[in-house]
Length: 356
Ligand code: ASP
Image 1 (cartoon, rainbow, N blue to C red):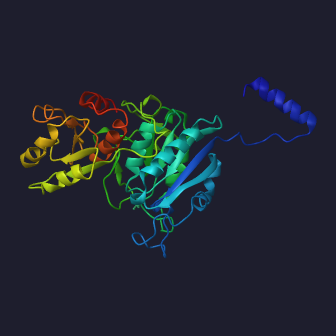
Image 2: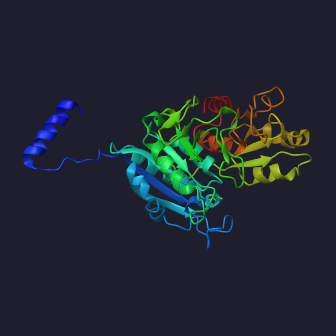
Image 3: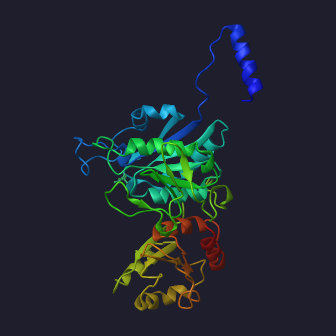
């Protein structure tokens, strides 16, 4: 408000005898809840592993943190109330649609999604590719259930809402917030089964921190996301089936065959090292790879290592395999599912894996 407008408002209120509102208008954040440990309930405050993920409703979860009202108005909608290992692709598509609807409203500043930590990185990356807005989308979870002593969920939720209303968070794609740290959906992965500092954005580092004085950003994601993404799930009910095969010494060869027979549209290898799969598997695959990409599964090489690139090499590229760059297998799977809604052309698919 300009000082002239403030003076005019003050004089108008003074003349009419009305009180001047002390609080500035707070932004509104839409919170979608899906369950997880952040909404987990155990029978005692020391139950840290024995508890029900998604035991508390979305409304009760948000009501249990009244301090949120200092930062934003909130609207809550429960999408699911489950352990995140039980969420479905239908949940993802419905979430993306509802987020797109919410963010299209001028009155909504940003979105927060509460989520189990087991698969939070997957939902975050899916939304990173399918939300059509520059407004912040922040996924948040907790490592200790809501009923636990020293539960981390309440502060994580406040931090998520603060990021969702932070002007600097715009245009940064979907983000994951836990432990006062902000990570990019593309890079973040869960690296610990139980500690509150379970999330790391691999080699690339956090986008920023949330401290009492401010939400501080230090870098921005450079791969295509959200408003610049070519993927659109607004008219889809499901995605092409894509599965992951883990690579290790002397794998059972029938697994690839079983997936091909099960009609997998794509198979991502969690390869050893820089995305290697065994010669025995390659030999077993050779007849399939001789078929046109339109009638066989598309194969992508990622790595089980956790850091670094998988690049196209002479052993795999002529063989028709796509390299996942730095995407981990579970994220390469999501990009492949979305890519297969557009193309099966290996060159186009490799372009997509280089850009997102
Ligand atoms: N332990 C998980 C969590 O942190 C359970 C889940 O992913 O829902 O929320």
